[in-house]
Image (tube, rainbow, N blue to C red):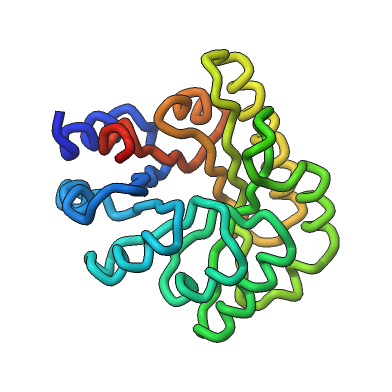
Length: 219
């Protein structure tokens, strides 16, 4: 099947109210343009050095989402244009995003990345660290960061029950934290990828990140 056909099939399956992020990491601009031509406007990248040239080469109404682990020294390269950073996993990183947002005179939307998987190599804050951060008042001091919600990656396993439980726990944390954040901006729960998005949506995901099911296997 072609990229436009894959996109149409995925969009038919995803319920209304759930946003699709097309994960375009390692994919060439031509593939992104195929999905763009079929109506997809939100794309996610894992590496700053891949996202920046794509941003310059591709249509300017694309929303770029940063999905991968961020180093503080790379924030400045995407701060002028990034729509949402999914992988804010420390106060130090958030302070850097705030600083670069201020330089660019824009508020940068972020999700707190939460560690829900059993694999230790996955990044993210613990539930406790995230709760402490939101209660500390540190975020409220930042004028150029807006915490929009949470992101998590489930364990890579065929055990659907385990994956479902991890998503269930993250959704419970999301609801709890929503009560800590005044206003309506805390509205995004990014969980679910090509292999497990159905489980994520059942547990309340509002944003799924789909790559291989749309573009084919990674290059």
